[in-house]
Structures are given as C-alpha cells and as structure tokens.
Image (cartoon, rainbow, N blue to C red):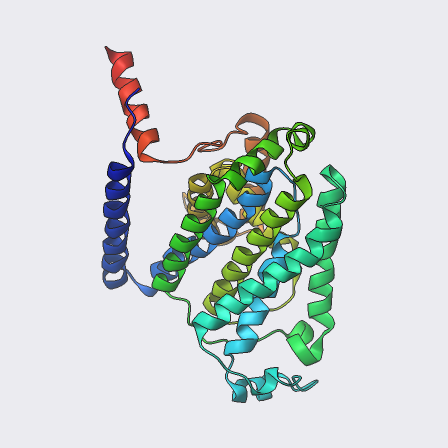
Amino acid sequence: MKRISFKTNFLLTTVFVIGIGFLLLGASHSVGDYWIRIITLMAIYSIMAISYTLVNGVTGIFSLGHAGFIAVGAYTAALLTLPIQQKTMSFFIAPLIWPLNSIQIGFFPATIIAGLVAAFAAFLVGYPSLRVTGDYFAIATLAFAEIIRIVIQNSYSVTNGSLGLKGIPPYTNIWWAWGWLLVTIIAIGSLKFSSYGRALRAMSEDTVAAGAMGINVFKHQLMSFVVSGFFAGIGGALYAHWLTTIDPRPTSLGIMLTFFVLIMIVIGGLGSISGAVLGAIFFAFAAQWLRIVESPMKFFGITIPGIPGMSMLIFATVFILIMLFWRRGIMGKDELSWQYIYDHFTKKAGDQD
C-alpha cells in the first residue's frame, strides 16, 4: 500500500485548513445570525467532545465528571470578563469577594486561565479517584462533578449561587470557537500520536500488561485527565460567552451536559479525534432540527401538540441503539486522515477491478 509522504500530508492539510477558513468566512457573510450561532456551537461541542474522548476513548478510563470541569471553566472565564458594574448589579444577595469584584480582563487571557483552573480541578479530582478503576472510578467522578455543581450552587459570594451569572459579554464568535478547535485538534492529536499517546492506547487495551511493560499507569492516566480538564475548561469558557447566561442547574452545566458529550463521542467513535468532531457536529445540528418535535405540527389537517422533552427522548433512544448495534460509531478508533481517504478509495478501485 502506497504511503503518503509527510510533505504531501502537510500541504494537503494546510490547503484543507485554509479552505475551511474561507468556508467560515463565506458563511459569516451569507447566512443569518441563527446559523452562525449553530456553526459556532458545533466548534464548542467539538472541543468538549475531543477533550472527553482523550480520557474515555484514548486512555480507556470511563469518567462521568466532564461537566464539572466545563462548569469550572465557564464560571472562571465569566467572572474574569464580566464588567465590574454588571458584577455589582448581579451579586445583590451576597457581594462578590475581593479581588474578583474589581477585576475585568480580556477574553483570551480569561480563557487560558479558565483552562488552567479546570486542569487544576481535574488534578484534584483525578489524584484520589484514579486509585480506583472501572465502575468505581465512573461513580467517583460523577460524585465529584455533582460536588462541584453543589458548591457553585451555594457559593453566593463567588458564583452568585442558584441565580447564576447574567450579562456575560458575548465574546465567543465563529473565529474564536473554530480557532480554539484547531488548537485543540493539534494539541490532543500530537499527544495521541506521541510516545505518551502510545502508552495511553496501550493502557486502554490492557492496564495490567501496560504496567508490566514499564508504563507508569497512574502518572499517564493523571496526565490525560489533567489535559482533558484543561480543554474542557476552554470549552466551558467559550460556552459561557456563547450562552451569555450560566447557572448550576443539572440541565445546564450538570450531568445532562456530560450525557450530551458522551452521545457525541459514541456517535463519532470512541478513541477518534475526527470522530469526536463529526459526532459533535451531528449532535449540534440534530439538536436544533429535533426542536420541531417539541412544537405543534400539522399532518393532513390534524394538529399534533408538541411534546416537551421529546428531542431528548429521541437522543436517548439513538444512544441505546448505537450502543447495541453500532458500537464502532462513525470512525471507530480510526482518524480521518489523507492516508485513510487514499486507502479507502484505492481499496474500492481494487475491489471493482
């Protein structure tokens, strides 16, 4: 099988990225604000899905605490970028503590700090939790995520409690979101195909055998967890400035968000970065399209009332069917590379001959 050279790969990828940039530029001038928001959301979901697939797919540890790190990133960035006057108006039950009440910084440094704080939270959660494995680890991370949410809900002098944060500047646009997605793909893609990534993939196949080969399982799993937490925090920062209002409800930044991201990576294929992107894009589009089943519809003159929550019921059904009959998802563990595309078409041509 012919191998595509590094130079050809680099040139084709550069052309592809520039092409995506022109498509986004064209979309920003030709489609309405509604679709611009959906295209932006696709990139935000992709960042969340890629960070999640690093832990669940590449490293092979089943975590349910991802929404906690997204929430930490969202609140950190929002508190750093909110105008001081807006903070004074929002925190009327308990004043915001110093120095957060007198700080307002730019969106880019706030996003970086949000990622770092989320990474630190991932370290605090991962260090004790990674002592256990399997279902126990999943339950422990779920509990930590819920603890983070409860702390946010009751810390009125830091997070404004259940009232949440309103009036967050709408800094997240199509360029910030897709730019950070490119950074995320490069960073986690480089990690996946480095020596560390090979160790992570070995652990996902057999932790005992990987340990017997001299791989420090705990250290590598903790590193994967912290890197995943950093990009989850970046996704949270972008998400907060896309929503412009955040609160600690379970349906907003709680367990439902972890469930959504899990659906994305299962659809795309556990362990594939490109699969995570495809799954996230599919989910963002389908979530908007399925809104029609929650609105009244007319069939042959008969009005069928909308059913609130029906879209989530459909997503849950799709998730169960995929887990039962199509566990590989769109990409499985493969990546959508130029070599993959070349091999796919040359194989088809060979079959026809």
